[in-house]
Image (cartoon, helix red, strand yellow):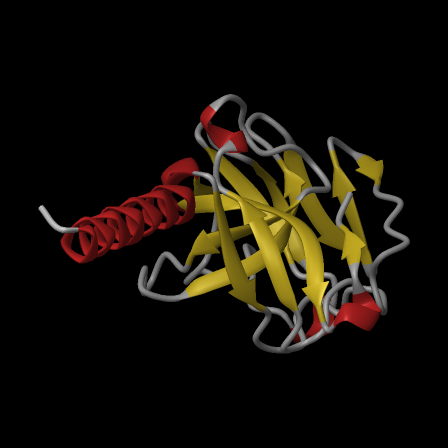
Length: 173
């Protein structure tokens, strides 16, 4: 094989390996997302770009306080981003503008306003989580029947960091 043919072959192999690696990384390790809408303000702004860790929940379930991406139960082709408020076995209740988990008032420095809606006391079923947006009064979340308790199999990953716009670069803890 002449050197031009060898060089072309090397380029093709390099491109195929790069595409396979990119597919593997996107499918199983991390994915990039764009925030769409105001439901996570002030933590996240619409049009910010995020890195989402798709790997972490293969080893452990979501934990309270984590911001995650999940497939919308009514239309799994859409993704939502919300904060985990309660996990399996927890009780959740919302009244008088406050959220109570296991009968304890939650301290939530990340929310914009007190919650205007009410939610009767309920227990989070096994294999699901209760999620809410940080902008409580402008968020479609577990309080609504079309979202409800989110099954683990709809969870795509944990939001790890905002990378764009660069002026807003931050990790999400």
